[in-house]
Image (cartoon, rainbow, N blue to C red; front, side, top):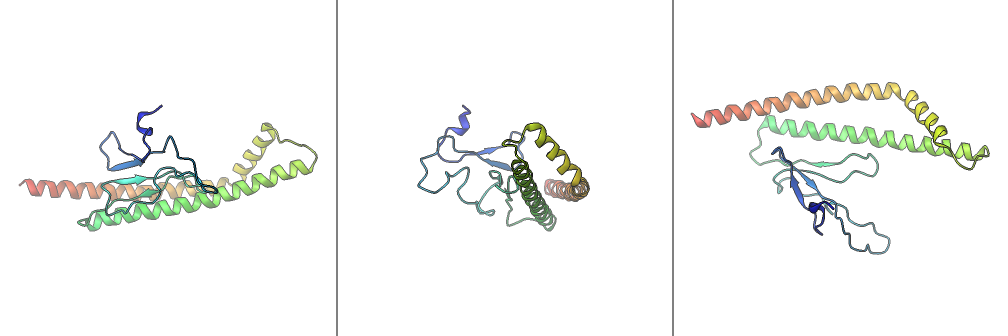
Length: 179
């Protein structure tokens, strides 16, 4: 078993590259849950962005299957760093919204497909029949996925440009302090 997942309390792991991110660990030995409640996985409550020293990445969202971020920020954050953080939050919200709607549509259509096959007389839907559904779903949503990918790349290019500008600003401030 992974040593960092043995603890009862969630642990925060710093990435090996020294990036300012922390990961909320999954509790490996959950306490027996009270009746009609799910066991707590990761952090029970979102941490306050001002009180943490790095970004937090939470457990996957039930609807979008994406891991939510809690972005850390300092009080002395520059305007450029603030716009980068807000742009990241905006893109994450857009991405979560897209995948929530997409997954809802996918599961509704999948349930309809299975129901129609069961109504036609077959008790089980084979993997081969499901593969036809998956292909049809992807073909039907090809244009949506293409537009999503284009938007995703453009939004990430904006984030990358802002991140480069923030790093340049930090380097210039560091050089100014040293002279």
